[in-house]
Image (tube, rainbow, N blue to C red; front, side, top):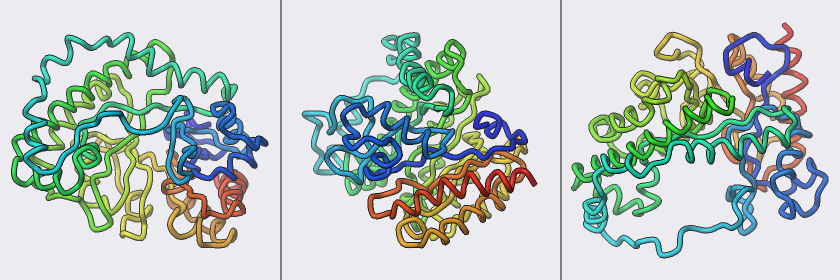
Length: 360
């Protein structure tokens, strides 16, 4: 059902996303296990199966250290890389970028086959654990934007973007080549291991008031690099679903027309980027967009009643399900403040009303 939904086919069962539940109580209740970290991978799979999810684009669970943060259940430990360089100015950013090797040298040391096997391995393991009950997707290579401010710090990154645009263009080109090579491995993994030809990911380019830098800077420096990174996916017919936070309306057209995005997930509707507005758009080939959302994790889920959740579930189906491609989901991470009754309502009513609506 999930695969047919993504292909915009008519379905009788709703597609329900394994939304990002950073909520230990959810996993305890739906897995039946008190210690959710003792055997985390089957615990998370079992919880989503019992909740009724049939599509999982990003396999995460609450961090052991901080419940609000996401962690990879496959990862043996958590935390950032040891000895990461410290940046105290835009000039530090400039100098670090100057020391990067030529992007053209990256291909020589890249093992596409090994990268493809590494990409497919966790997806195949999850597929086996779920018994085919959940369609699992992987991420894809990109030109790095949000990594800039997490690596360098917002102030230094944005100051360098203004003062040293040629250096930032080099950074985007370098990470785009890393992304392009990663996508060659994705293409191989999809072909050799029978994975779904869809990928999910994105970059947090926007805040609540729109892009964090000028559209001119994005057009000159970033989007050309991102377009190069995803070329192998388009050549292989692999479709991209893009994660969006904040008010992404100023960049939606660019993501669709220049990057070739086939769908979106997220939608902070309180910023003005509504599900209704995005649903009115088409892909650059004229198809309906794949849409995943859009029950709010900042308003309805944490602060509404279960009836409010049910009403929003029905709104989402009415707006986005006609024509296919719709998966019901939260807008982003469901945090521990969210009542379990509301999470139950999201899944239970999503299944019940979704069947009724799709049947009509």
